[in-house]
Image (cartoon, rainbow, N blue to C red; front, side, top):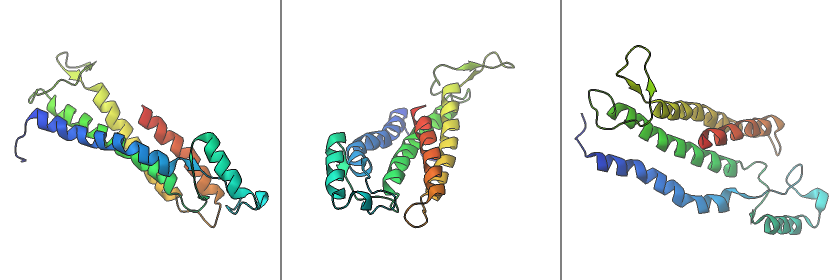
Length: 177
């Protein structure tokens, strides 16, 4: 068994990853949300010799960072996915601890709005916390898919690119949920 701690310390531990994630948003925005203007193979051949100038103007117009084409560097997408997964995981930790701490034999906290039990009228099911844990389980699976899709063949892998754009919106929807 672990050494007992106060509920206040536990809540402070819950808050720290969320505080860290909020603090990382500006850096994430600069490194991950950048213009990717490279053409079919990332060489800007269709706009040569004006490709870099067009990319810089496009970045300025969109208020994004200019960047090299990332056809084979999936780091920007992975950074977004990693941040989202970390946020969901941090919230899942809170949800899991809330479920454990709100059990009748512990009764340290209330899980807030709860669902009723069809067999035990005195029981309040922690449905919000359970939903967060379900979202976290789904998000982990989607993140694994995104990690696998990050290995592209040559400069433009249509299969992995399509998998990323199938999976990333799912992860962002789970995060928003």
